[in-house]
Image (cartoon, rainbow, N blue to C red; front, side, top):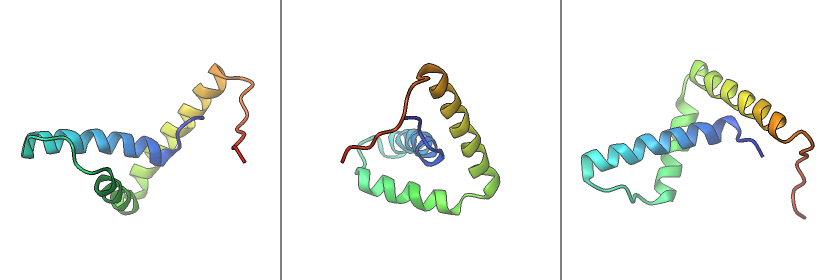
Length: 78
C-alpha cells in the first residue's frame, strides 16, 4: 500500500528528530509516543505549501506503486 502524505512527512521528520537528538543529547532512543505527538502537532501547524509538497510526493508514490503492482487492490482484513 502506498504511503499517504502524513506518513511520508512523518518518516522525514522522524529522521530529522533522530539526528537532532543524536547531536544534542547523544542518544536516538526517544519514546515513540513522544515523537509521534510532536510530529502530529508539527503537521497540523505546517503551512499549506509544505503540505502540498508532501501531497505531491504521496501522489507520486501512489503512481509508482500502481506501476509496480498493476493488479493491487486494497483489501483490509475483517
